[in-house]
Length: 316
Ligand code: SF4
Image 1 (cartoon, rainbow, N blue to C red):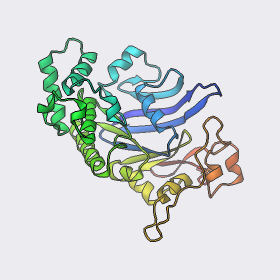
Image 2: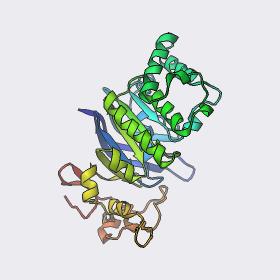
Image 3: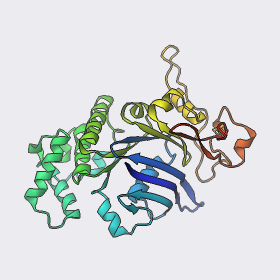
Image 4: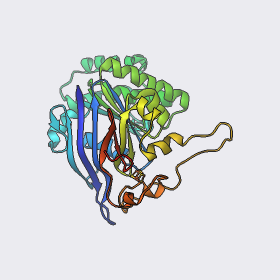
């Protein structure tokens, strides 16, 4: 069952120097119970896309296209309808839990404030029953409800953030670099937890990350973004086995050679979104670039079952 259906999504930011096109004609789908990994270098538009789903972009952003979720088009929905969706049907886990939790509020007050923001008449006993349930799900002992954020480790704080995101049983979770500030062991624990919670709560998850290893481990489908475009989409196993887009190949090759200790990376830098290159924005860095690549942006084609790619190497 399709939970989230994004078609032709465009997001641009107004700036003094002109519009910055952060997301361009993006198409994505997330099925219920599925994790879609969204990967790309910093500044490729993946966080903007995640925020566009929840419509929490700054006022300078203009959004067009459609985002169908919970019977609504989130692009055209009015704020009161969006408020009902946010936190309840769809939730977001941010990058850095320390800056999101109020150091002056106990865990209990964080939950109470959130629940009452959606249900002003919520009874405290009932709110705490729900809080204990989600804290248990993320393996935080509920008897720590009256402690402050600084009394928890970084991993525990992130688990509290996840519990806050789960309190209304959302069907969709957007996790934007949820483990960036954590060490690798805690990162693995958090992602294993997210994976088991996804199954327990039957959610769809959009996992936004620059880390392909996390996508390989925790996502079923993946989309690769470059300069605001979805360059390639497909099942994780197939994309890793046979990457089609030269950018995806470059990302997968960007690893340390254990014998020579050499770090392979894609030459050059991602483009300035204020003045992106003409045609395919990857052409200045692409080892397979052809004269046609500098003309118009390549059409998205389906060269394999369940796979799409935007590249002139696959004319459709
Ligand atoms: S369209 Fe051309 S420049 Fe872009 S990725 Fe394909 S081959 Fe490379």
